[in-house]
Image 1 (cartoon, rainbow over the protein chains, first blue to last red):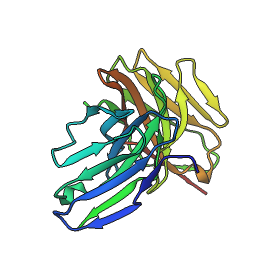
Image 2: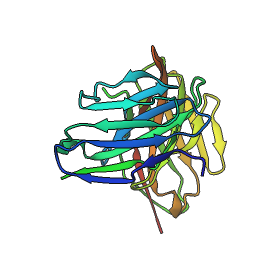
Image 3: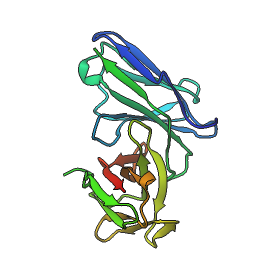
Length: 114
Length: 112
């Protein structure tokens, strides 16, 4: 399978713990995006990388959130000191670098904060 | 006002019906438009791109009206398997690159 893959699929943790998610994009895609989706809402943009450079961050991305893409391939999203409001589906997508290219999504990581 | 707005539905239609969804966007500089389909607890999947000239893919037709800033999706001869949430997606350029904004989605339920 050469699509976008995310790990883990599900994460349950206690409030206050740190969590880290991983995303492996489609290999030829140089753009990588992170989104958060809650029930009944469309995905909300969090941040975006072109190769290893993080080019844009949403104001939704508080100081507790950090994302990296150190070698321009896979990316990690870390949430520190999780809160119940962080419970959501975290989606990763990738695309080619040309303007207006559609994004292809991974299965997502469902985070539940107890 | 939200950047991308959709009627959340649900739209309940009988099998074989024709159903249409609209989506409006607020940024006149938006450049690219797509419809995605999302099944319950699954990731969004690209359904089709949307062009001013209109485009058709089997039973699905998408249309863009730049003057009125809306896009539409028409589904003909709807099937039970079409039941899903349809997300309108708008892309515009920012200083850092493309910004992709999703609508909240329109839920479709096709019934026997």
